[in-house]
Amino acid sequence: MTSAGFRLEQYTLKRPREMLLVKAEIEGELDQVAIFKGFSSSLMRPTAFDPDVPILPENAKIISVDRLEGPYNPQTPRYLQQDLTWQETETLLAEVGL
Image (tube, rainbow, N blue to C red; front, top):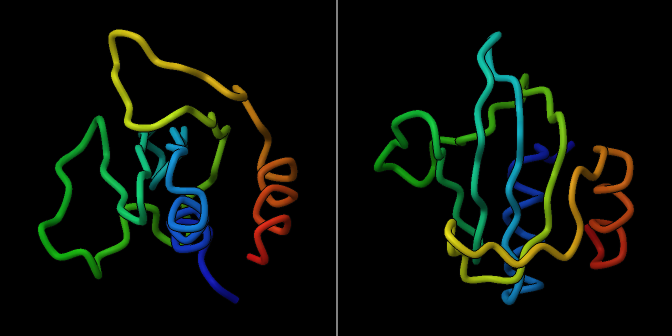
C-alpha cells in the first residue's frame, strides 16, 4: 500500500493548480504540511533536504485536509474546501486514479 503522503503529493501533480494543507499528528506532535506540485514541506518543523525522506511518515494520523488554489499565499489563502476528513480526501484521490 502506498503512503498517504505519497498519494497526496501525486494528487498535486495531477491537479497542479491546487495546494493541500494537511493537519496531521506525527509521533504525538501536531504538524501542518503544505503539499504543492508533488512536494511536501512542514510549516511547523524542519524539512529534510532529501526529497526521499517523507514529511508525512507511514504512522502519521491525518486530522484534516484543506484544498486551496495554488500557489499558496498565507496572507490571502483561497480555499476550495476546508477540514476534509481522510475519508473525504480518499474520494478525491480516487477521482484522479490514486
